[in-house]
Length: 305
Image (tube, rainbow, N blue to C red; front, side, top):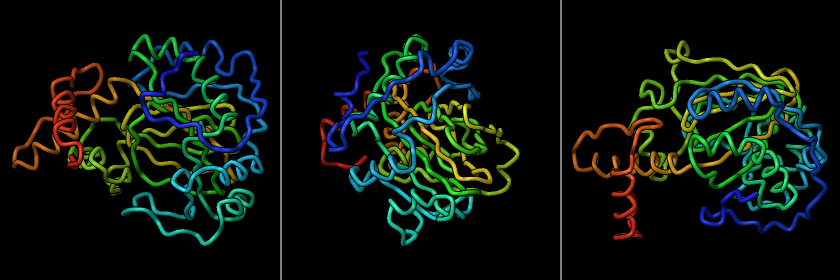
């Protein structure tokens, strides 16, 4: 399958045993793969999937996975959060296992990060990404750092406004939700200094105000549907009236890393009192700034950007 990850820090270390992860012949039907190829990497869109109610993705299995993941790979919060938050919300007081097993009534939102740390989940992730790999690599080159995330949400839970550095497809497995996306790279929805702060160690949560609402596009998802999210596209998610399970399959590209490093370089320039131009979106070339940033890191590896 040759999905590159060793050079990107993926570690397979959890003790959770591998399980049968047999899939249908094609989880993404031909029409979905065609639509993805036409829209990738910059156009968000809904596509269908045939991922069944997989044994690794039941509430009991996910609660077991959470117990094997390192603490840094588990996050869970109250579900009744505002769209915009300042930093990480306070914990709920429940354990992650109780949060997941009683998600219908726990008023919570939970995410299990980097599920590829467990062998069975890694097999599932790579099998899904392999179906899309030809379309991905034709546009953005080698598929790097494959990672998976599972979201378990109570009825009407909110995932606050934020952005992510990966190319991402969110598959809805159980329940429903509405994701509202905003244009990637538009400083109205995420200012340049916010991008720069994130790529130098800051939070991914974004400031929200209601004046932004008219710029969003809603993507309503039922079980059997998925939505593609471009790199750094701001978004928030409103869960439906029943509890929900979603699987996010993500990857990076040389382009996404170049954009991140160019933002980090701009952070350095801004600290000198200058007002640097924002990096271009795909397929703009950010090589000069990204290479400069990497050179500076090698010269002073202990210094923060």
